[in-house]
Amino acid sequence: MLEYREILVAIDCSEVDEIILNHVSVLARKLDATLHLLHVVHSHTLDQERYLRQRSQTILEGHRNKLQAEGIAANILIRSGEPETEILNEIEERSYDLIAMATSWPPFTRKNHVRQRFTDTSRKNTYPPASRQT
Image (cartoon, rainbow, N blue to C red; front, side):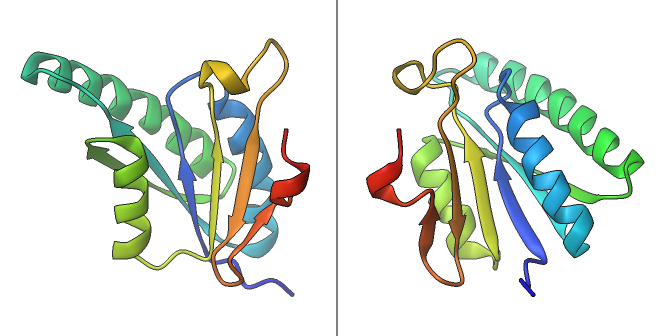
């Protein structure tokens, strides 16, 4: 049986959040895992930072409350900086068994099309395999 106990979920506070959360909540429920909801605030001014941090906090609290109502343990993590760098920093600083993310980045999204990637950090595999990703 898989031993996924700590699952990092990168959230970009967009419409794709629900899609990835639906996937990982099934896993978390079956495996009694904790979801760690991470959002990276990417801003250029202090005012923008404050606004985006508050907005992110509100969105993540909504996700956490919904998950907890379903009996799933969930934590909120908010970092500031370049998303790629901060996601990698979070992974290096803590121990996660699985990393899940979806993106609303325009080159990878169309209406009803979301690029999703799951990474098994214990085996260093990416699902779907890189050669099959769209």
